[in-house]
Image 1 (cartoon, rainbow, N blue to C red):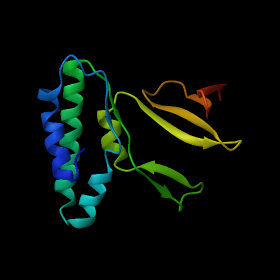
Image 2: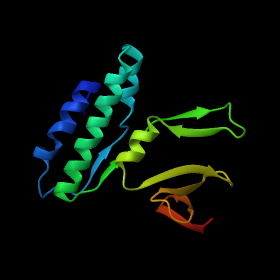
Image 3: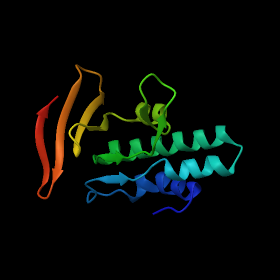
Image 4: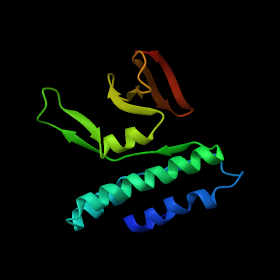
Length: 143
């Protein structure tokens, strides 16, 4: 697990050579936490954005060339100025650009229910309601 944004870059660059037939899934939780730390300590925002873009490109290349999915989770931030407050992923444009599928999870009513919204690929809106129970996901159907 990388402890700095530059270590995260090294890992992403080496992912193609580290990948072998045994990898079934690569998970990045959270892809943007070290990026945010980097932004807080540097004035070189363009460089940090370019590095995150490169990291995502290396991950996409490794996943495509070796046939495994990469699950990338992102930190979010709240937008309270909008008509309706919303939560947006950090660096959402970069993450969306490099992703084949974007799935957003939102809280829903009643408490404990979540809604999964397919944002990419853009087809007809798909919203799936579920709850996490003692035995796993409980399907509550399409919203």
